[in-house]
Image (tube, rainbow, N blue to C red; front, side, top):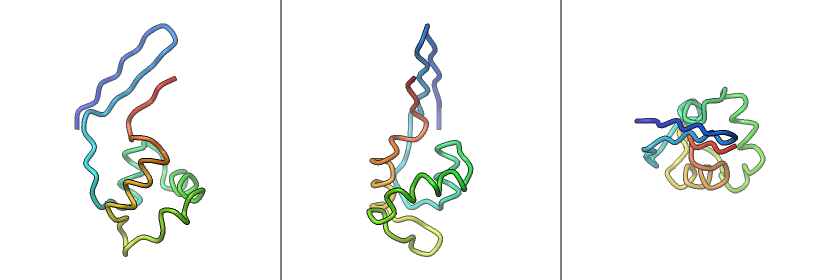
Length: 79
């Protein structure tokens, strides 16, 4: 996973050049979004009805797609 950080006067952009949509644990997703598990859980609790429950320790591919649709692509920040 390669990352690129670009800064200009009032804009900072951080882009991860590759994110594979596959089954992930909450810990892995929190790491992609660079937040704690507690923070990530708070974020996804807002739309837990749409995401559904994990399959064991993992979110399915479809659940990961929903999470990315709601939160945006991990590693992409624009201010």
